[in-house]
Length: 487
Image (cartoon, rainbow, N blue to C red; front, side, top):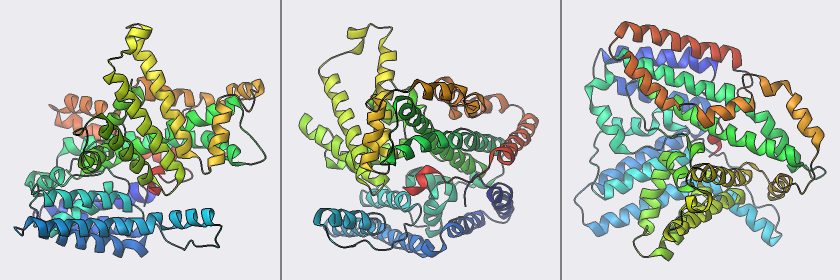
């Protein structure tokens, strides 16, 4: 079930909210079971055939977590966590990467078809990572969770289940145990509706209107008989750069907004990443919960920066390489991750050498140059992320360098396109990403304004809900999935 559908907005969501707050009047635990049931229905609606896999994974990891939290000898618990994580990653590898590796073997060995028909369970990467973090923290003694219902909700809570954010148990479990979570709060619901409406705008007005521009260019690059020239290639690359940001940040805003409607605060995932002036800053602002997970559960266990510079650079590169592979079973994702690994290494070498950009371009120009270089590096890497073939990626990059020619008529056609001046104009969308306050700032500002006026908050909730419904009615057309659903 998609967040930006009539069924969800006008059916599933209001019914679940009503049931949740009515249940809260009966007991503190009953709302938890309402959310669990709603979350399972939400997931099963999408992929009923793999719902048992999700439930089996939850049961297995809960039992493993209880074992790891026990006072058994550390050597026994070490074997247990290695076994549990191996099973988790083994399932993920089978469903997500089996055909990738089999296909690679086919290509290298010239063998007959080895790939098999496998259904990729939606959200498996997110709920696997969430539970691995829980297992590691259980092993470290940082979590003592005995409530099975709270654990099930922690994993299945429908706003984050399909595409994150990637959660820490310590962020969620205290909220599930707090009676205040289940008390209806106008302010909280108001802000949740507002944030959901902002995310909805990002998805259906911004991201989905960028998709045709991006698709046209990348499809052209995939056509062996055609090549994208300079303006087409750059237009497609920039359109995808905007599409993926507003698509995923839109989902994340809707997820956080939905959580707020139910009294549950989810972590934010984006902080205006395209305004970053270095690649290090970019990764502090982009997909923040995944960056946190990769740092805490991969980079640091690999050794982090504790064993010298060479070890640090190796760990950075491996972390980003595996982060790229996590996004999808394709060598193009591996290349994307490797590029960002190289970017981060270069950034740290630059910093360690004591070099400062302002020494080369001046203090006033340094932030602008840093921003431009960072954004160009990010756009270059996005070409591999979006492309479906290595040849297509090469063709796009060739077009962006002018190797496929420059056609002034294409630029003239682009400038004359009426879509350039509409609500979903690439120029407008780019300006929003570059200079407009981000959604979290807007919500914080709204909270400050509304904090002393409950009646105003009530009215604002109605207005925000009306805006969200209006956007849904006007702009929801072809119901495009969120891009991160495939990961």
